[in-house]
Image 1: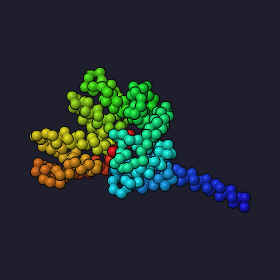
Image 2: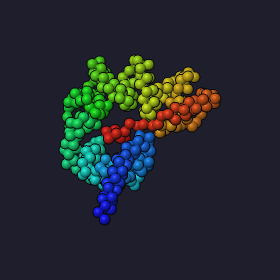
Image 3: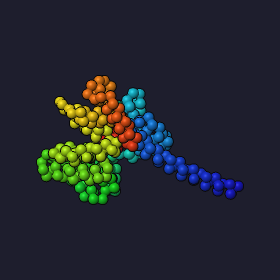
Image 4: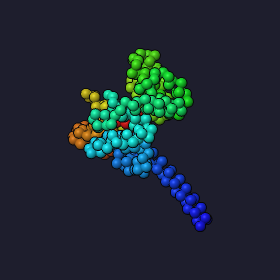
Length: 309
């Protein structure tokens, strides 16, 4: 009997280890689906941890419900409160009434007590190099300049760099030469770590260098970032006159944007807008090029706790 109990004990340990790893992976898998705009699949992947009342999973469940609308929104307040009570600072700040939260709209159980608790938690995370926590502290509490030294060694250096850029652009004249130089430096740190949103920002700061601006946008697009396709298509949309090659580029980026989940050019793509400017054979060739591109590239919205919706 003792031997049997020992075997059962080890079986229990191994089972918990296996399922513990599986549930840990479920939030990561869910976020991967969310980057592609697949909210239902994201929730399905996170379900084991949601059921286990994991605070991170609960936070993402609440935010996804907020984006979906409908009856699910009536659950948001309860879910955020459970997440906050277990120490999630992102849930805590959602429960503080401000211009950037939704206390009244979603009838959340908001209470100012959560502000100090969120700050305390972010200070702990920032001390360990968490760039997202630095961003939130810069936004809600501390001076942004405090986080300049973290750029050299932060484990979340892309978010730290973005935090510095955002605060710089909020408090300084980004058009001034010295300030622009700093902004480019911070964004380049993030871009070098394949953070596509930084690449799109850099493209706007390099308007005088069209080749460099275009390279940043195309690199961001190769990472699946829809905003890059939006900017690329927009460059042609605003033109009064287009050459044949410009029509082709416009069509290509508008169609890629649509396939990445943004229907801004839906009317033009479904009507005669492009068909009247491009031969059927050219459109077919472009469609094949787009299909080949999308077999290698999946949508990635680069969502995280600081920028979701």
